[in-house]
Amino acid sequence: MESYRQLDSAGIRGLVFDIDDTVTRNGVLEPVAYTAMHRLAGAGFELVAVTGRPLGWTDVIARIWPVRVAVGENGAGWAWVDASGSHEGYFCDELEREAQSRLLETVRQEVASAMPQITTTNDHRHRRCDLAFDIGETQALPRAEIDALVELIEDLGARTSVSTVHAHAVPGLWDKAEGVARALHEVLGIELGVEIDRWVFVGDSGNDAAAFARFPKSVGVANVREHLDRLPVPPRYVTDGDRGVGFAELATHLADRGA
Ligand SMILES: [Mg+2]
Image (cartoon, rainbow, N blue to C red; front, side):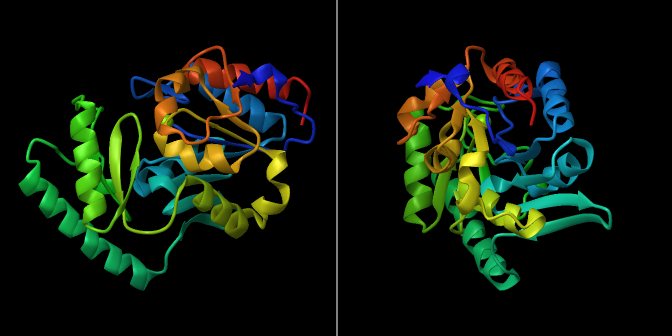
């Protein structure tokens, strides 16, 4: 990985960024990272937050953070606010989402019976399209147990995505990269494939794998080094600081040249 200082900021239009452990520390948004978002937005960059967190949270994030779109549940849906109000979009249509919800109920029951020590996340009630298990938020599961959970979910027919805090059962074909591409198209009329060189992705862990692979200008905050074994394609660049401190370093590097 190269230093983020090597990232050529010429022509950059926007930043797509993960939330947990990219702009937060111990679950709390870092002041330097929030200030950095405002600085970037003020300099004319389009900001897109993309997270494994619930779609119920993205409704709030889209309203009160300086972002154009907030993508949640690792790409399953998104929320945005414009002059006509607040809106939501989904990767799959309503019929598909109903079938997916039945599969998730099966996963929930099977995990509860085979691995009763594993609990669903405390943000469960705000989820619409996936099911998440707590692997590091309120309890730290050993790696072997996380691997067994992932195997069980995949045997039942769902895909999985693992972040620092949650293991997700994913019943559809979305991921962070595909979800962001669809959201940018629906909300801003942007074809990401055509201008992907103009976008920077910033993240830190396994559930950012698809985005690290898709975005040529990908950046890991320094704590990404703890998760390189879960990333088939590592980020091209890395910051010096970890979490929100690293995000703020990158923001300064980008905003200093102007948008
Ligand atoms: Mg993260």
